[in-house]
Image (cartoon, rainbow, N blue to C red):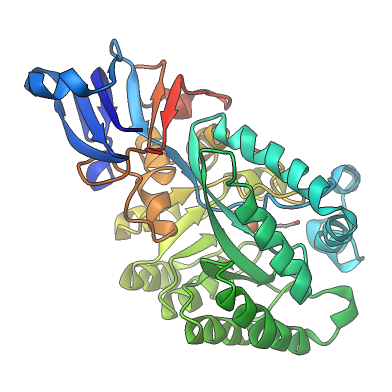
Length: 398
Ligand code: DI6
Ligand code: FE
């Protein structure tokens, strides 16, 4: 894209963590960057001549949406487990009986690279169809060195031929593989001594994540993973306090994590630690809904403390089989009590912060020309619909 001038738009700039609307606004982008944002009445005529001009006729323009937490590289599905859960089995019981993550690891290992790429690409395309221009993808269904690196390579490769940015996260410490049953520490050695160094060396991961939970890794083990990540210059994130309070949020904050995610069982001390560290709270209402969870994350505390809240799909086969970020905006409001404005911040400016990206998520001069145009007037309409909103046009500045 050389130049783009949008006029007569309702611009939800998302500056300062608010809609920060410019009514009858205009946006001028040049060489992939936003050059100017302001009222249409102030557009200099000189700007129009060269630009590719677009009259939005009052339609809404937002930053391109950002899904900052997905596990979308996997094969197969877990529909059978869904049926079991409906009959009373819990997620933890299924995992302990060898199902759960382990069954997706098996299906993922058995899939060819081409098949895994196709299945994952479909999910990515579904997200992108809703105006998502940046997607974080975690590994975690490989569970040995080559398997994890393969998932990261496939994730990175999905960007080819698509106008969507991919950010990758190594989640080697997702679950204890069956062959390491009772030897979780030995598996953590593998994560720390082999996976993290290899992912860093091959520049396959932008961050490192872990699942801190009774059915996964304890805080001491997560600490080792985070120390190894730090030694290799990689920022960290954490699946924290999803099913129980393990003080995961505070642990993530201690390591200056970009984000702590889930947080259903996080307490006031965890929220305070996140505030001090500048750690973003990533809320995942799809998993909450799908697991029939009743304990909500401490939204009011996060709000009072001023901890930025992001909202993401958690796209994965076990706890959040969805590819609709706009549905998550609706869920964040209806299930967690976010306002539509907070929800949209959660998929734009705060999601960018959860990924450590400073060049997108807000419409202002200097940032990427990364935006979506919606056939909607009110920005609350994005969270109001029960999913499935599709933009009229997206630009990623490419
Ligand atoms: N928490 C989750 O919700 C997903 N991973 C995690 O650590 C679940 C992944 C799965 O069940 O396949
Ligand atoms: Fe997750």
